[in-house]
Length: 103
Image 1 (cartoon, rainbow, N blue to C red):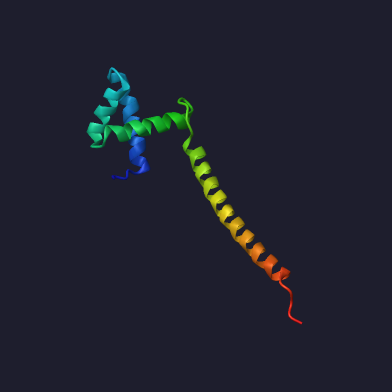
Image 2 (image 1 turned 30 degrees about the horizontal axis):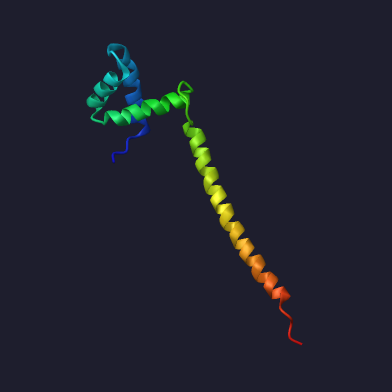
């Protein structure tokens, strides 16, 4: 899998926006620009969709919101683990307190 820099993504999206008026539809423009840059048209199409969602012109979860959701999911998982540890510790200590002390 090829990783592209944010600068490359921005350049490709600029080129796509400039090429759109010259082509009959968006997919034709995407194929043209992707071919010029030596990348998959699908990569450029996904970048275009993500750009539209982030700009609010297409429905969907923005990049920022998706990152926040991921962060919160990690935090919930950590808190669940901590909660399980605390439950186990409380059971252990409750058993210790219930045990009769030797005299």
